[in-house]
Length: 217
Length: 280
Image 1 (cartoon, each protein chain N blue to C red):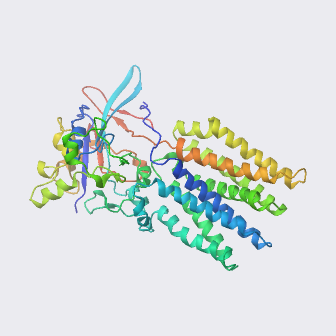
Image 2 (cartoon, each protein chain N blue to C red):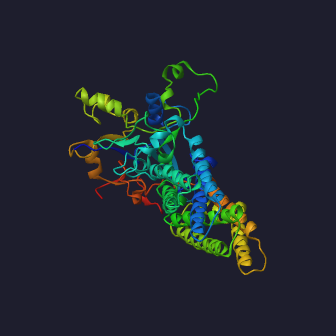
Image 3 (cartoon, rainbow over the protein chains, first blue to last red):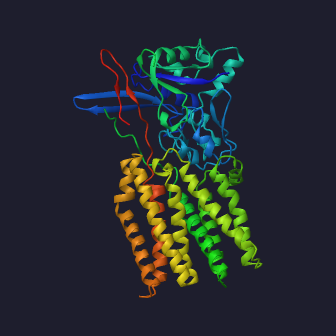
C-alpha cells in the first residue's frame, strides 16, 4: 500500500513563505486563498518566549471529517490517502470547511484579482471559472504526483512527482513521500525523530507530521 | 507554556444558514405540536401548513447560500454519512405528508408528520454536532439543546397561530423547562471542553445573548401565569419563546462560531534550547 504524507521539520522552517508562494504560483489560487500556509506562532510569556513557524494546510487525514459531512460526495479519498474534491460535484455549501479542524478549506464566491478590478495577464490566462462558488483546498499537487509516477518518477524523490511546496522549500523543512515504504525519507524522518500531529485528539489521523526533536518517540 | 490564540470566527455560514436552523427548528416543533393537538381534538390546518412553510423557508435560505444553487440536487448524494443529505431527504416526504393532511384530510398522515418532523429536527442537530472545526457546535450537548429549543419555539408559535389551551400551555411550559435544562447542560459542556473563550463570551455574556435568555425566562413565567389562571398571556409567551430561540440560534451559528485554531503540541528544539510542551 501507499500512504502519502508530508513532514514539516519545525526546527528547520524559517518562515520564509517560499512554499506559500510556490503553491500559489503552481495552483493559481486567488487572493485570500492559501492552500499552503506558514503560521507564525508565538508561545510562552516573557522572558520565556518562543516563536515557531508552522507550515499547515490540508492534512489529508486518514479519517477526514470533511468527507463524512459532504452531502454531494464531492470530497473523496484515494487509496494513497490523498483527500480530493470533485469540482463538478461540489455544491459550495461549505459544510466541509466547518467540519475541518485545520481550517484548510476555502470557498471563493466571486472572481477577485490581486490588484483590484484589473486582472494581470497571468490571472487572465490562468483564471479557472470552475473554482468559483465551490470549495477548494490543498491537493498535495496530485496532478504532479500522478503525472510523475506515470513517468516512472518517485514522489518525494523526484521533483517532477513531488508537491510544489516541498520542491521549493529552501531549508528542507518540508518533505513528502510514502510512509508505508520503510526506505522513504519520510518514513526514516518519522522513525528517527520526535514528532506530533496537529489536533491528534480529534481522531482524524492527519497525514502531516511535525518534527520537533531528534530521537525516536 | 501557552501558545497565542489562533481561534477565529468562521465566515462560511451566515444568517442564511442560521435561518435554516431557525425555520427548521420552529417548523418541525410546530408540526409536532400540531400533531399532538390534533390527537386530542379538532385542530386548525393553519399551524400545520405554517410548520411546513417554516421548514421550506429555512431550506430556501440554504439554497440562497450555496455557491452552486443549480446543483442543489447533489445534496442527496451522500446519505451514508452526511446529516445534511439526510435532512434534505426527509424534507420532501415531510412536506408531502403535511400536504396529505392539510389538502386531502388524510388523518393517517399525522403520525408520519410527527415522525418525519422529529427526524428532520434530529438531523439538523446532528449537522452541527458533525462540524468538528467549530468547538461550540461539535459539543455533544448541542443536540439536545437544538431539539429542545425547536420544540419550545414550535409550541410557542402554536400558541401564536392556533390559540392556546391548558394542555398546550402545559406542554409549552414543559418544553421551555426542557430547553433551560438543555442550555444549562450545553454551557457546562462547553466549559468542560475548554471551548474558545470568544464563543463562551458571545453565548453567555454578550448583550444579545443576555436579552435572549431574559426573554426565555420571561416566557416561562408567562406560561406559568397563564397555566395558573392569573392572566392569559399565552400569545406573548409564545412569541417570546419563539423569538428568543431564534436569537440564540442566530448567535450560535454566526457570532459564537469560533474555530479551534491551529495549535502545536511542542516547541521545536533549536540550537542549544530544549523542546517545551504547549498546554492544550
